Image 1 (cartoon, rainbow, N blue to C red):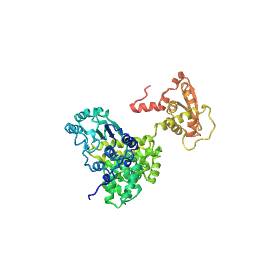
Image 2: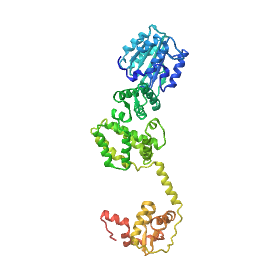
Image 3: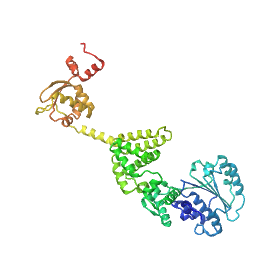
Image 4: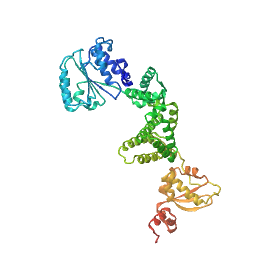
Length: 504
């Protein structure tokens, strides 16, 4: 007897065998029991989740001689003929290769004949979205007024490409992706039945790679079982050319440490081992997406399928990034994956992006930035009013007081630009051993009184004292002599830039 692959051998034969589609199976079984099956049904959903298998089971249930609780018996002549593909009353058509109007006209003609061996004629059209517009139009009349004994079951992965006039004549059932837990449970049953040794981590990895499709999971399990005695995590990575998640744990750690050399060496080593660049970019984006989920304590099937050691390390790594940065990295890696399809030198494009990522780490969320700004604002508002009287302090022995005063101005310009600008524009009257006396226009009095000057002095150097003389604007012209102009930083900067001089 020839070998039968797992995807065919373990294909569902009864409604109860269909995995993960309970919301649909319950409706169909009740419809069979009550003999209320509509003349046209549309099964839509991702590939490999049971659409065509459910259509065949429904066809068997419609023609079964011994239906029990809505399930086909699988033993009567009709059920056996349908399972073996010999029943002339159940016709399965591939819409991709029979998509023209002539094929649909032939189907329409065949629908006019009564059933030969069963009670109903059932037409299953797989990938129905591949039919041409003319072929769809040829179906409209018979869907509008079908013979009593004819049932149509359409299967598609792209329902949005089916004509609205067809959709309006069908009852639609949307199949969902299978969860990792559901797939792993079925894989365990098959491994035990086939006496295949396995690691649960390996089965979880297969389920994750299958992306919700049972057929894909069975195909991968079949392939691994042919080459290895035991299904392991490492064997799966090696067989399918998949990059180990532990690699990305180490790789992202180098990104966090901003180890550009280490990042480039790891990437180069990966390419030398023959791994595909597009696979690397996709799985790096997937790992950063996992960091987003872990940072926000979001639990998904992808998270639960990871090894506990990887989850712990990834969660610690996620604390080094803000949500804004993580989402930006994921978005840029997805865009990079699309760019690679048209890049003339893919390696350089990827390396450029990898060198950019470490410098994105220090970015912060907008809420965090606003909170920081508000906290600074509160500090300023809580600063007591500055008194112009000076206090007696010791001399500052480390540096000349004028040098310290210049540094204090620079410090203020960084911490509070408005305050720093006001002090920088003030005229220095005198610098004593223990204080600096400056002249400021009266209009700037509110800035100094309401600002955090006292707090600035405390944080910069408590021994620095500033005595302030407020002058009215009309008296300010008296102080603008040649010497004071020469001492003003802004005037000096302008003269140096334009090679100017004071002529009067």
